[in-house]
Every structure is written in C-alpha cells, then in structure tokens.
Length: 337
Ligand code: PEP
Ligand code: MN
Image (cartoon, rainbow, N blue to C red; front, side, top):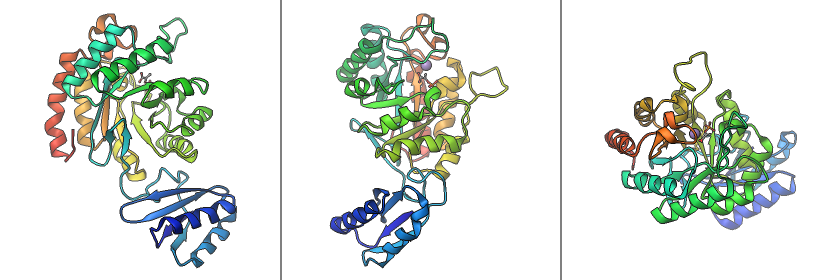
C-alpha cells in the first residue's frame, strides 16, 4: 500500500511509520521532490487496516500498489532515483561509465587499466575478483588479493570500484573493500544473496539474468530493496536467444521498458551482450540513444592475453574512441557525462 503524506514534517512521517510497523508491515519512506510517500509492504490481507490511516490529518491518501514490484516501481516514486557511488551519481541525467577488465589479473594490469579508463573519462572502475565461470577449470579470479588490488587501484586513480560478490559468505569481505556490489547475471535469482546485499549499506549493481524476463529482473531489485537498501542500479547485459553470432543479444528495448516501470537507474553492458570487441562501441552508442543512465564496458591493456573475456575487451585506445563517440550523443540526450 502507498500512504501519500499531506505533511512533510519528520515527526508526522515518523508517527505514520510507527503505526504502519505496529500493524506488522515494513515501512519504507520515499522522500520525493513533489511528494513524500510511505510504502507499506507485507501481507496485503490486512490492507483495510492501513486504509484507516486516512483518518490522520497528515495523511492525504492510502491506496494499493498494483504491480508485484512495489518499492522498485514508479507508483511509489515518480521521479528518477539517483544512486551515488563514492560521490559518483548514476541516474536522473547523470550518465555513468563503468570500465575496467573482466578480471583483476595483477597489480600492474589493474593499475594500467585504471589509469587509462580514468584518463578517457570513466567514472567507476570495475574488475572481477570472484569470477562466475562456466567451467570449474577456468580462471576463478584472484579472490581476496584481487579485491585488495582493485581497491588500491581505484584509490590511486580516484575511481570508486564495483566488483562481483558471488555468495552470501563473501558479502562482508567484498563490502569492506568495494564501493558497489555487483550481482552477476547467473545470480540474479539467488534470493539469499539478494537479501544479504539488501542488508548492507552498499549500492548494488544488479545484472539481468540471461534467461530472465523484465518482470523477474524487477522482482530481484525488489528483493534487495525490501531489505532496506534503496540503492539499486539495473543492468541489461543481453539475453539468450537462438542467435549464435553474438554472445547474448542486447535487449535494447529493455531500457525504455524498464524506464516505464521503475525509477531505478538503468545501465547497459554492451561487452557481455555482444561478446566481440568490435560490436561494443556501436551498442554503447545505442545505449545512450535508448535513454540508458550508463554503460559498463570491459577494457584490457592487452586483450590477447586476458585471463577472461579478452575477445570482448576494448584496448585503452578503443575505449577512448568509444568515449569520443558517445559524448555528442550524451549532449543530445541532455545527459551529464
Ligand atoms: C561480469 O560483469 O564480469 C560478468 C560476469 O557479467 P554477467 O554476470 O553479466 O555475465
Ligand atoms: Mn566478463
């Protein structure tokens, strides 16, 4: 249920929150520019009791949220959410470029990459330390050591860092060293993991499962938000189809579709979608034009010898060229890049 406040006084809001909680619901306050609402989530059978809150003078209206995703939906928040990662803004007109290698491989590799992507204008540094690989015999990531190298490189070059967390057990360690937690496509419906990152105070980069519908994707964001963490960024990274020419065809339509349903920022990953470096820049251009709030791009100083995803990684000079190509498009779209 949505409780639209007639008053924006903190004490009035707190009063309604305590009433909502007494009735056994979880109350999430959404301080918008045009209105403040309280989303009461929980067992909807008792909704008539919440409706009674309309009797309070500082409550304007109480009505049900119709969509299955409640906190992620536009019903509770009309204006776009802006997620902040170590001072970098994503969404609401702030276009964010996340760049870095698929995996952290060595101190030198992550440093050289961090320097290059920073110089080209990236805002966040990525790099996998815990890698979800199809084969158990493939490189699994440098784990804790990689995490520390990523953190160090990010600090040295003034780039907040995002990296994947694969299990509930890894959440405290990864949260201690990363500015943003990535949930990979393969874990999009790992509900225990979604709840665990929802209980942290770190922003979450949620990637769409390669076989997940947009509704399922939104429900995964809802899992994180329902635990009290409102800072979720959604990432379209391609879906599985009959086509074999590309790795996971980019569902570019997911951008405007998500925009219709959610206030959360939407980012596009053209690297994992295409699987080929030469398709990354055209798809990055498409992402900007489609209205995305950012892109995530894999960059490697020497893709030929990369431990993972070399074929889809851009060399630093190609990444620089990508940035040059998207700048005028960002201007047309009224985005700060
Ligand atoms: C990644 O970003 O390194 C990654 C593994 O992506 P995805 O989960 O989208 O496959
Ligand atoms: Mn990768």
